[in-house]
Length: 193
Image (tube, rainbow, N blue to C red; front, side, top):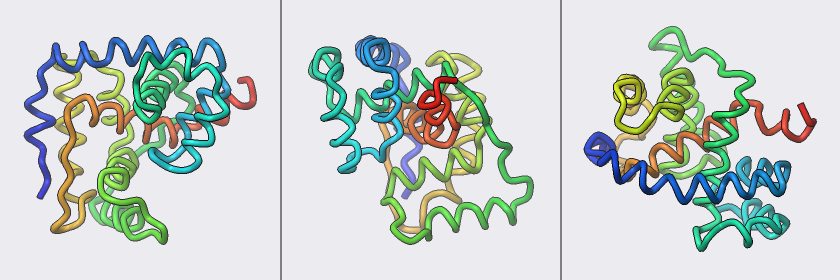
């Protein structure tokens, strides 16, 4: 079961209000340690790598304002993705290619579970739309147009019988982190580009 209603029924003020303290925390972490922040955002959400990167990021404790580490990492990914877009590859061009890519993501050995795999799949199948959605102002017509295109790929990215749900802000942040991880921004920041 795919729960799209939670995404579509977004309360714009709620998303914007939720993002403000997160954006502030992310900006603080990036300002104090851009490479450490980039490393944190590049980790898999909830992983031991994320915990290790967080432990090495001294600015996190000073900047997080009580927000969870994964949430701050999502916010950092959102900001870095918006600031440092190096490559946003084109998506698949045929339904067959789309199916092949989606299946390869969902069936990969050691594949991520549920929401994380679906987000990676959406970013792979709809790179332009996910980027447009992440960069769009919450509640704007640009956001709605991009969301429509992203949601069109949802049936390919969620295995039959699986259930995924996102609150609107979680969907935006999850896509931002998945897009950041695929964008090449992390490597550029580490190199100093």
